[in-house]
Length: 189
Image (cartoon, rainbow, N blue to C red):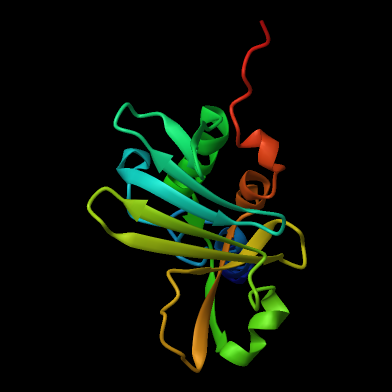
């Protein structure tokens, strides 16, 4: 009788060990919000929308200079100032101020063409009220079509490596729009 109890105990302990080990492996496979496997997203830039006083956009079909007046209104700065479509400008400013960069990779500069960055598909030069300048070069979409390749604040000096960063696809939508969408439409009388 004693050996029967030992056998049952041994079978129960073995079963418990197997189930416990299986449960431990299963829990390790579950996503853990505290684990740092997922890339940490960083902001595109470290400024607020209100800090921006000028934008220069070089898109495939046009080049555009936007300037913020003392009144807070945006204008297209050409031979004469044309009122800008506030919603279009605010959409872009919001993306620049709150957009998140995803992964970055260092690549040789001779591979810039592979990412659509030689020449860039669009460029945004940003001027802040404290005089700081920022630049964003946008390239092609990623292979899955969910992000854009970009170069953020590229140095002016020639270099052997460049940092290619994944940025939100909405930036392309904000920049690649017809010129008339940047101009405020006057109400018909």
